Length: 497
Image (cartoon, rainbow, N blue to C red; front, side, top):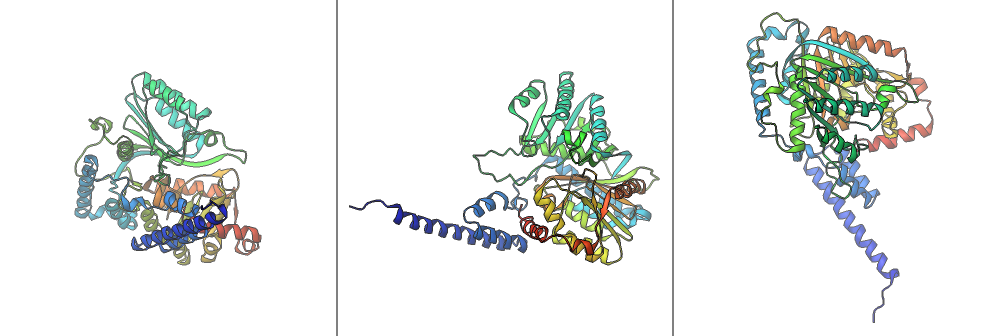
């Protein structure tokens, strides 16, 4: 008779499980190599799976899949997208037939404009008015007051919606407008807005709000989408007014935090760019519900479909709205950043809360500075995430050595995501300068080809410099050994998550 013994069974089981772990690690590594994935990521994931048995496999299956390539969020075949592609083709023909449009201030951005047309189907927009907000309070007040005047529909999309004072203020207004007959659609990300409970959702639905939860993540279900979040912040009211930027709907964006006020950048648009914000919202709605609206034309009240006339005099602000994410064929926002940076002739001012770029953007920034372009980077002195804080700082030494001027924002938290180039163009939206925004998240940015808009962004950047500490290479190199170790460790992890 054979007696069961843990002393003999456990070593065998342990060896079998470890062998299975190694087989899966090898299989996953070979798969990444065959997919021609970033070699840095491939080596990093291989190290994680080997050095962290079992846990490394779970992390890889959760965070390591590339669903942009797998087209988890496929948008091919959508009628609205086909229409958009046709309009972009018409606009490309219009540009080809009237090259004078891309002269003067627009000349340096000819390549970028064509690129955005082709990789993101980003139309050239004429906008009558663009208003800037440089803190969460003023942005949220303007959004609230605009919704208060809504007569036909409100489409609100946010990454974070908190069950707090500001969140409930917005929700109460949305319910009030829905009860009065206004079409109200609210979309929020399931991870970013995890604090929204079922009871509150029921209240909103009972009031007539269409509540759209983007890509729900269930604890006991495969977590294949946990790394692919909708980070866009969009508000469209009645089809003629739109907002985008970095502002979420939560108390800290309005009242600030213990460390000080919350700095952010948001823009309000009246013009054709509202068409593209609306299209982005409705496309995300399609992903949530897997069906579209029967009559979408009523949500575009002031848009004329047809070939654009670029030949006449125009005092509007020219712009392109770029949406990028796992549904895109190309990493449009990352490519936009690259071309904007490499097109600079005199200066580049960048504000971002998180700076953990891929090698493409990192080299573009360093090469611009080495080429005697005045490159300035503003990041928070204190981050809201330990990983982001240390991994961002891991890039400072090499940036300083290349000639990039780096400033640490000290008064509160600076959550703005802006780039201005040569005083002629500005980029504003939801995307951070990190690999998550480039590869994993659904993001939206506005590219403004306008001296006035760029001057506004640059003016605020220079004002913010008075609230910053400039980083000097000599003193930076004297930071503690513990800080250097933390930077190296979190930089190793940053490409993975």
